[in-house]
Image 1 (tube, rainbow, N blue to C red):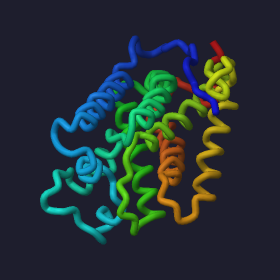
Image 2: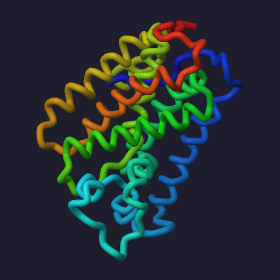
Image 3: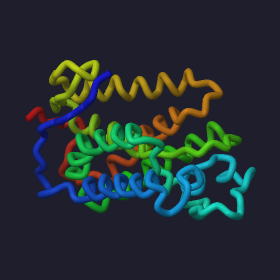
Length: 229
């Protein structure tokens, strides 16, 4: 287990990662609203705004008393719903460490669309693999997976400072850290069988991030040109 804390790669094209910070704050605020049940019971909001494959496929319907987003928007709304504090914290930590430099390579608006499209594609891939599932897929992991592959392809030589085994401070290359992380997601998905844990959403996010990177990045930003500073 490796917890990334800092990469030290300077921003070159933007002064501040406004989109990254905005997405992070929005996720935290929504989590607080749901956790405190300000607008309704937590479980119902998870169902109403999460992505349910059977509902998206038209094989099931939500109860009439349930507050919910339009079905076709749930691949997006589900990205902002998290099951627990640690679920939120893990995703937001990855966003904080890696998102700013991916945003730097794309610009604020293109990064925002990249994040949303990577996450939504991740959800659709999960639905394709588990079309009959009536479990609610929630969390930003698909979008974070897209960011992870984008960072790997942009800055493989960057040094990531973090905690190995959650305890030992180390500095490792982004190429090593993220390659192993991505391999673990793919390996887990292949071995998941009939499990409806969202491994295939992670794989979908990785595929989407890799496919979208070139059309979304600035022309002057090279691939595999990772800076180690």
